[in-house]
Structure formats: C-alpha cells, structure tokens
Length: 136
Image (cartoon, rainbow, N blue to C red; front, side):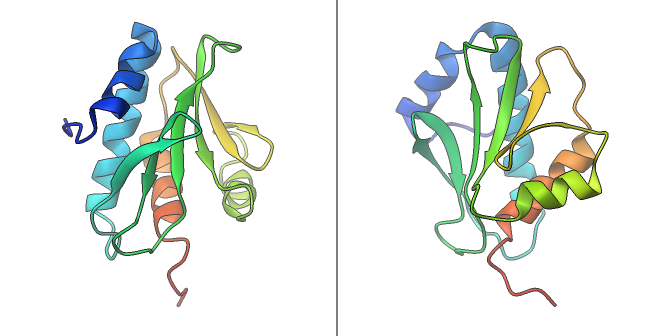
C-alpha cells in the first residue's frame, strides 16, 4: 500500500466512512500501480484539489489531474473525477458504455458495494495520466 506523503491528504481519507474509505484506498492504490506501470508518467504528486485527493503528473507533465472522492449526498457511492475540459469521459463512455455510471463529462461513479472492473478503470487512469503526451 502506497504510504501517504502528506498528512493532510491522509486525514481526508480518514474522514470518509469505513466502507467507502476501503474502496477509495483501493482506487488510490490502483492509480499508483497504473502510474508505475505506464511508461513516461513518472512519480505522481498526491495533493488536495477542492478538498479532494488529487493525483498529478507534476514531474513528467504527461497527464491530466485525476481526483477521487466521496460525497455525503450520495453516501453509498464514490467517484473518480477527470478534467471536464478534456475528452476523457466522452472517450470512456464510447469504450465502456455498459461498464460504468458516468456523471456528465467529468466523472465515473462507483457503488460502494460494487466490484470495480479494474482493467477498464486502469485503462481510464492511464489515459488520463498520459493525456498530454503526443499520440502516435
């Protein structure tokens, strides 16, 4: 499990309800694992954006920010957010039309008790973390 470099980010995770925290921690680890296995991404910066854990490719500048969070308005759900100024979510909707619940052009929403399709989610993470790299 990836250690927290920033205690403020760790406290945000601690504030989430236990069921959702477990799922968000697994999603956080998948982000780190995907980054490590994706050429050119480099080390991630974990910080808070809008009070939510965010993952940036500050070193390589290869990608777009990925955020993960829980919202008390939907207590049994959590989400992975992408920059709404990108085409990422629209691409995911085309590639995975029945695999995810989407929130507009900015998020993939997960049920706290659902099993996430890790391979598809890892693809989405990799696409975000390499969004600014030239396509071949």
